[in-house]
Every structure is written in structure tokens, then in C-alpha cells.
Length: 233
Image (tube, rainbow, N blue to C red; front, side, top):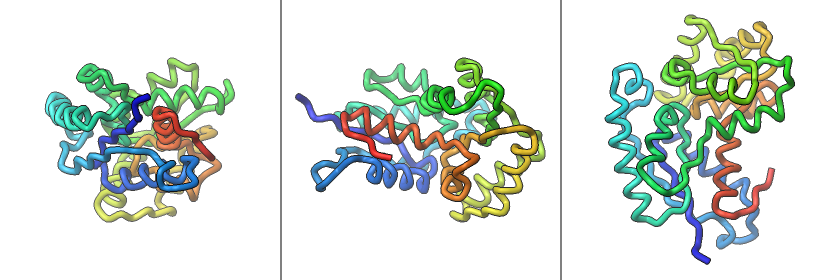
């Protein structure tokens, strides 16, 4: 049987890629070095900003750069691909069209799992980049699985973007007080949970376990299973 290798298209951002790799290591059943997953991590930090690409009609450029990444991973003979970036999934179907290697869809994995977590009368908030919100990526998947969702108003969305870009991406800072003020807004508007729909927000999961859903968790699990390894909580 051919050995399975996980390919990761990272760098969006670099901190999120480090977090993703660490989680895979921590959630893989392994008793020695050789039990861990063989993987190729491509940290394409200079790739075009995804939200900028969406807002400025540059998705073709994003796809072109993704194609370069795919070709490298094909040469490395990976057998599945994970992309730990929510906004890049805006063109996930086009990226998949570039290769026969299965690409794990983080947005769909989240919605599939959410339907078993959220009751019919409960509402889920969406905290994400402007690009992810604009293209209704989570909204569409929530509708597909019958999940009620809530989008922030313009002012709160500006605060979310500031947390992502000014704090986490620019300075590596996770300001729990700032995050909580935004999270409280969602809770006050009837949300049972809030989706952390940007990998830069995943770092807040540890402090806000009870009220947040982290898509990265589902991507980690699907990635481990894609190479026939055993997942542990």
C-alpha cells in the first residue's frame, strides 16, 4: 500500500499554519516518531491577501498562486491537501479543479459537524474576514444544513477585522478583552455559539471554549483521517 502524505498550503497567516501543524501533532495517536503524519508544509507567506483579492477582483491572481502551490505538492506526491485559511475557500472548487488530489473543505466540514451540535432553534454567529462575510461562505453552508446564522453589523465587523489584522496578523497579539466585547455582541443577539471563521481567531478558542466553534478543529480531524491515522481528542 502506498504511503499517504498530507500536503498543507499555509502562510495565510504563518501563525495559523504553526497552530495547525501543532494541533495535528497533538491530536494524532502516536507512541513514537514514526507514528506521526508524513506531511509537506508549504508556508506561502507572500501569497496575495485573500480579502484584498475578493474586494479588488483579484481572485484570478489568487487562483494562479494556488496553482503554483498545487504543482509543488503534486511533485511531492501528497495524497490529500489541507488549506488552513477560511477566506481562500472562496475559490475552493476552482482550486480542486486544478488537481486530482482531494482537498479538504474546511467550511463544509464545519457545517456538517455543526448540524449535530446546534439545535433547530439555536442561532450561530459568524466572525470572519470581510471577504468571507461578503461571499457568504458560511451562510451558504449553514443554509445547506439547516443551521440558523447571524451576521454582525458594520461596526462590529470593523472590530473583527481589527482583531484579525491589527492585532493577530500584525503583532501576534490575542486581546481577550477586545475579543470578548465582540463575542458579547453576538451573545446579546441570541447566538448560542460563534464560528471563528478566520484561522487568526482560532487562538481565542482556548479562553472561550463554551461559546465558540473553531473550524480549524474540524480541519485537523479531517486531515488526520485523510491519511489513515487515528484521531484523539
